[in-house]
Image 1 (spheres, rainbow, N blue to C red):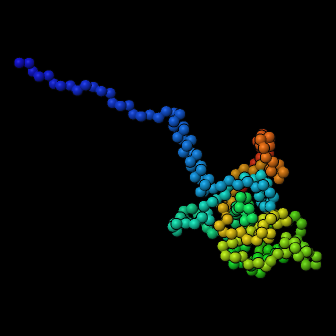
Image 2 (image 1 turned 180 degrees about the horizontal axis):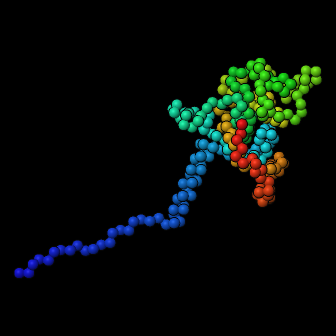
Image 3 (image 1 turned 60 degrees about the vertical axis):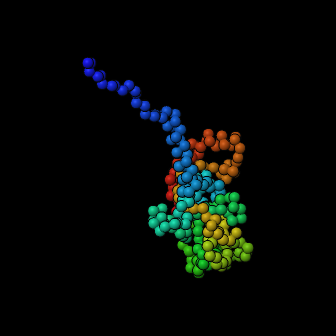
Length: 242
């Protein structure tokens, strides 16, 4: 009697591991990068550009800034403040905010008066609670301050203003270029909930006049793009805003 032959299973090829195409890998990388960029832009930093000379000479027309949107945001846990280096709004901070008279526009100014403080200007000199504020490192005047012997109209808030007391949850802000800035001297106080963030640094600067900067349309865009290299202020790159 013949011996039984062992049974053999049919040989089948193992399924090949799934491999993404190069095009799909590139597409997924781009999608992730876009999502990350949108997240950062929405919650972490915001790009802002300077259209006027109200903060000169510290910030110039054509400066493009990065604004820290996290620093003043509310925290769920105390550890969050330390990790994200959060802090309250302080005097001297340069902040970007919604213009109280037109929330569709963003303004940038320096914080001068804090909630509860009394602010006054005498011959363009700022006094906080009766004490002169030291501003030599950033303030700029187009014309010299007057003195007690010169006649100044009471309506000229650039020379004399206040005293006024800053309400709770509001701030008194001013431009560094004091004679060319529409700020709290004209529209009073900045509400805390209108502040978008603190200006960090200049990441690019384009040398243009206010009129050139305000031009719109495809022709103006092409002209500015083609001349951007020659008009770039290279020494402004990564200029830290103080």
